[in-house]
Image (cartoon, rainbow, N blue to C red; front, side, top):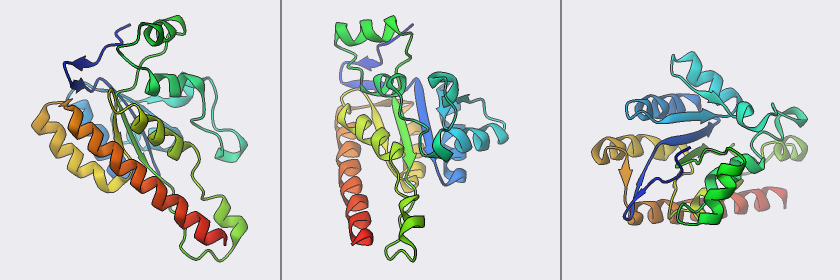
Length: 199
């Protein structure tokens, strides 16, 4: 199993994880990634939409061994997913862990978080819109930006598709750092909206 994805400070995207509540941008992204022979893994409904568009995709449940739990509250929270995202490709210990558990590293994480209403009418219903797994995915990818590219909202997908074609699937450190910065900014805004709504 190949685990290295870096050429000097460049990262080559070979495997992507997509999880998006808006399906059309996810389908467009998956189609563009396939042009560069990127292997795509997607969660539940996102995988259904991508497959329905005629694009080859691996279901995340095939990686974790679990389908959606608790009515969809638990989909992506699994060690095999986070080890694939957080592995440091220059750490022999990390590489050995991946090999030991046959975990394929993930080079791109693209997520679109469930929207939380600014002024929820029903708190109980609104609570079900609080995205847990999606935030965790992009947070992990942003932390590991040295080896991973992260997209944290669907509005970024189209711009990234253009960048993907220009860069031919290879991205520099500054580009990855910029996306990580945008991710942490967006997470903080997302959490502030939830805190405001719950107040």
